[in-house]
Amino acid sequence: MSTRLGKTILNETHKKLGGNMVDFGGWEMPLWYASGAVKEHLAVLTGAGLFDTGHMAVILGEGPDLRGFLNFALSKDISRLKTGRAGYGIVLDDQGFAVDDAIIYPLSEERWALVVNAGMSGPVIAHLKKLPGSEKYEWTDLAGRLAKLDLQGPSSFRILKPLVAGADQVFEKLPYFSFKGDYDLPSSTVRLTDGTPVLLSRTGYTGELGFEIFLPIDRAESVWNRLLETGAERGLIPCGLAARDSLRTGAVLPLSHQDIGAWPFINNPWPWALPLAGDGSFTKDFKGRAALSAARATADHTLPFVGFDPRKVEASGAKVMLDGREIGTVLTVVADMGLGRVDGRVVGLASPDKPEGWNPKGLVCGFVKIREKLEPGTVIYLKDDRRQLKVEIAGDLRPGRSARSPLK
Amino acid sequence: MKELNELNLPSSVRYHDDHEWVSVSAPYRLGISDFAQDALGDLTFVEMPEVGTRLTRGEEFGTLESTKSVSPLLSPVNGTVKAVNEELNDNPGLVNSDPYGAGWIIEIEMNPGELDGLMDAAAYKAHLESEGGH
Image (tube, rainbow over all chains, first blue to last red; front, side, top):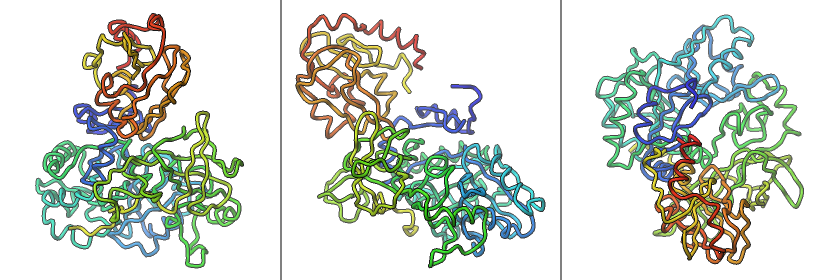
């Protein structure tokens, strides 16, 4: 490993836990731990998993009428996003291409935070500084000050609750995509029972019930260990980036710079990141709007697909074939081991109608970028040098996701 | 990842530098080494050839897949596939949990002389060291 790779504060902890460390976006991160990627993926579907996501970047913006500025800078219409609620939007350029994606946190009218991908705080801040009116704002990269732990899975609430001071109040009215606390951690009103100040966000990247916990970097190891100790009886295990990737794919969530990137952010499974009115028009002006309006009729379509067994193609270079014609490329291809087929139907571990005693064998799934819009159920073939894999366009991927389940 | 001294490298098989192994005596079975299974991580699918398929040294005859990757299985010998481990269809994780036993992949009909080009455990360990595999 290059000594120049970034390391989160938990780097040594991962190695002690048997983490298989790899270079991910310039950071040395665990791909999986001793349990292995399959058990880790399944733990998040049935119990809970703990991820170190300290490589992600937090940008704090401060200044007058930041809402108006960010509403132009981001694809999401945040004109009515309340303090305490989080939003998901894309930072677009003039061509309507995705610079990066971001979770947006209004802390007050004058203070907003953006959580972006590893290594992206610099490019995103540089992009924001070029927008009209940016001179009124101060942007701070909080790298090195915050740690971030993602606790994900249906048991995550029951694991976290006993560790949060005044838990009944903290978890009251905390729906999916809301948060409590502040990125200025010393002043955060949310504390763990050991006194650690946190910002608690009911978000994640797995499609399952869970939380992203922002905390002071010097508290990360202690809180990580305490969560694993107290959560073990509810099936909590540490999880690496391989499980994170297969979980987010099954949850139909994009990976920035792979599923979204240097092409127009339109005609994809993430219309909720765009300011769309009921009639399909845009509700606001924003950077990249003109390009997206123009691209709508001609841009490629990004669609989820699901296959019939866990076999995959090599994502890089694989082609999409329809009736013998090449119609596009493969963006993501993973095996979601929580899925299987019963009488041809896609069933997941959390499907209410799964047969008793049934165990999934896993299904290949992911995203294709193709020149035409195809309806769910349309059979396509993914072709690499080795094989031609039959899959079908899907409306959704993993059934029974728990992200929006009530906290109980 | 396992450290070199944690790897199970039995002397009952011969190793290929692409990390497949073949039994030293008939029935000649083929699998992948403890090093390979550890590096690949949890397997989610093993694609095996049909019985009767001709194997050519250095050529791909199947794949090993994890949740994210597809890795080729290369034959270290010339021969013919005599049997495949059907258990792996339901439980590919056997390759991870028991790479030299229940996780065998195919059985081969071959000339015993095919073993000559392969490494014993000590030579394979030296090969892993020289590759800086860890």
